[in-house]
Image (cartoon, rainbow over all chains, first blue to last red; front, side, top):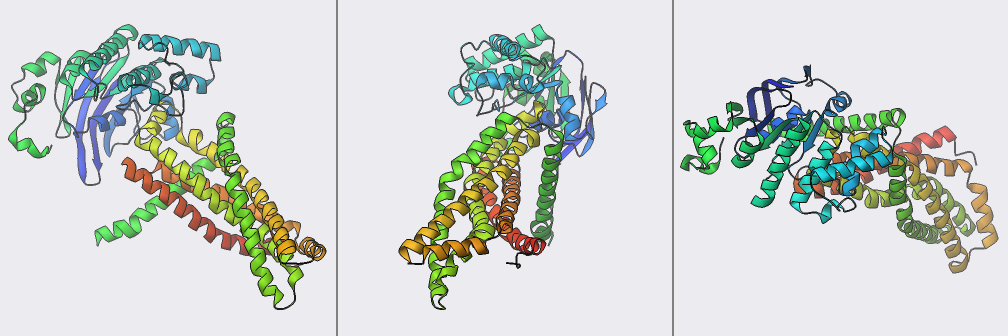
Length: 250
Length: 261
């Protein structure tokens, strides 16, 4: 479903990705882990075509998307749902308008049918009674849930999560993890979550890929990573700092 | 050397290229997509209706000060009654559209850049793109359409109020004979003067919308980036429209041959 080959990306003189390669099969759920600033979010944006690689290929459902124009990408992006780190809800719209955004623009459903779909999505993310609220009236966890509902409502084939639990308290983070698991299980969607939270990665990813120094350093299931004796992997999964890392250079 | 090249040549040229692409894409979308009527009306209300107060005040005082200043100079050569004609022609073809555009650039251009800039830094623009909505179609086109519609209408208000206020100042305060004031105003103001003013307002509307939207969509991260984008939107819009006004005046006065009075 998602095939990444030899992906390179630099910003000015700073090389972020230096030949990333992996693939994710249809219906699989993967978690991409790595330290802050290692390029996880950049990788996610490359997958959905929000930014373009310097070199390499991104193939979605067999189609290379690197060279497509913004308008051609709009058709490809219809296959995706994306949940942003800060939820990225539209301030000027209500919760219901945010969730029904794509459906309203496509005009293939009646307003009544859109409203029912919005209610179903809100039920899925367990947010009742919020449809007429503005994003500013919601807490961080609620905003993430609305972001998830907005990404789910038009039944995408792939869903991308950018740091789904960052900035949330452990209880809310746990509920978001469970929600992601529920969505993957019930809707059988291919999902990719980017996180530096090992607990979230272990829960939402059948396959975990660790990004380090611009490449996929290791990939496998949660067990493989937790039992790894590689010092880089061991330190990351157990949250152990190294004096040499004090400047947080990658 | 490389840094100087980057700062003074490469970066401005890149910016200019991106601005040209946005303008082209906006014009292309105008003819290929059907913009949301609801968004257009919302922007029309924000840009047109809500700018009326500021345009009324600036238009009135511009007409009044122009009348007072022209009267002082014309009085020296006993041409007091020509004051109305000068004010009227100036308000129709120059001051009406320019002052209105500057006011709209300050009020609306800043708001557009700040709104789009905030959307950019909070990833709402990226969210739009992931939801298969093109930012130009969804955000720029309704604003562009509303600005090019509003500005000529606001300019008409400004011209009307400016001339009206100058008439009051000229006749009631400065003692110009109202019949001559009115007569000369009508004789020397041609429909082409008004038409030139409206063409300018239409073009200024396009400049304000594209410059402000471009600045918002290309703003840097953080509050500082939004602040800078807002300032630059107002400054670049204002400078651009003053420069373009000069060339429009040269061109339009020749095209419509306004010397034949």
